[in-house]
Every structure is written in C-alpha cells, then in structure tokens.
Length: 296
Image (cartoon, rainbow, N blue to C red; front, top):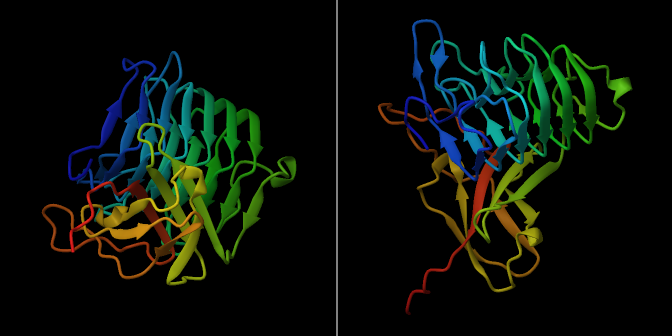
C-alpha cells in the first residue's frame, strides 16, 4: 500500500479486525504546518483488534498511529510489526513517530510484543505510548526499539515490561530499576535480527536486521519459516519491493542477506527517494520461489 493519501484506516466500527502481512509506505501529504497521513491509523473500543507482521515506513506522518480525541484506542494488540523512518517524506515536520498509541481518553488493555522500530541515532523520531491521557494495563514484551527517543511511556499504570531492548536512548516514563528484565544500550554494536513468519501465507516471512557494525552481508537463521532444504526463495528489500529480488536456494541452515547494493524506490511525484536505512538497518520479505526453473 503506497503513494496514497493514507495507508490503512481501521476505526472503532471495524470490530475484531486483523491487519497482517502488509507493506505500507510513501503515504500522506504535506499540510501547511506538518506532514499528514499515517501508515496505519487505528482506533478500537470493544473486542481485540490485531496488527500483526506489518512493515510500515517512510510516511509523511506516523507509522502506526493508534490515536483518538473522542474515539477509543483500547484492547489493541501489536505483534511482530517492523516500523522505520516514518515522517521522512515531510519537508515540513520530518521524522515523527514510528509508533504512537494513546489519545485524549485513557487507552486500556494494550499488548505490544515482538515489534522492531528504527530511526537513525542522529536524526530524531520517537515512539510513545500513553500520549495525552495515559494508559492502563500495558504489556510490553520482547520488542527492539532503536533511535534517539527509543520509547516514551506517559502516565501508564499496571505495567508488564519484560524482554525489551531500548537502543540508543534510555526509555522515558519508566524507571529501569523497576523493570530489570530489559536491556538499555546507548552505543550498540553487532547484529540483531527479528524474523516474523507470515501467519496468512505459508513460506513467507518478514525480517528486520539491525547491522550496527555495517557489515556488507549478514547470515540469518531462517529455519523457523519451515522451508525444506533445496527450496528456492526470493529475498526482497522493502525499500524497493518491486525491484530486483535476490534469488537463492535454501540449504537447511542460513540465508545470506546483502546489506549493500540495493536501490530505493522513488515516491510518485518526486525526483528522488528519501535516504535509505541500509546498511545499518534493513527490512526484507522472504518468500518461496515456486516459478518453474528456466530451461537451459
């Protein structure tokens, strides 16, 4: 979903909705005061609503924007989403938020689990939960938040916060000694990967790679996808999703992911693309290549 006025809108009336496996980018427009148009704009009141394994990047506004002034943003589940560089297209406001959850009414019953977010350390951009009115009963598990404002938790209570990595900055609004089962890293090194198997399409997965040492290639264990040895696959860089894919054959062990040499798609109506996150960060889609082999 790309080059539109806004990505996905899922309001209170869309009860018990699931949004899964979407790739959402280059949406929105510049208004007089700031960038407008978000990747996924969601509200919810009754029954759970799930956002699972979506890749959301380079909007004019925010990435995932769970916000309401009169509307509710409760019983929302965010699982395995990859968000980066949202706000980059706006010439007025620039980087904004990869994830905003909250509004003018308290948000209740939130689960944020196994998500990955990235902003360059010197460039701004944030994540925030609670926003104006705060939240009640927040579960924050096994996420990797990277950037100069990795996470702000505002006026939230009844918290379960475990297994998270806050990279590049300390979290705001929570005392880290109250939640010792998390990691804060100010100057990251090495590599971190998150692989999320698509629940709707067998053999497909989303991959986030944090390549802090800026290596040209990263080896990734993809065994959880369930491919058999000898399976041919395609590796697509989401920053140029319809461009050339890397073709390979799975050997039952790992896949080598190139972190250099990729192009970046140009938004409709523009002469150039926004800056790429590679090689420091990359988001990819892995899928089976079931096209018949070319005859020699």
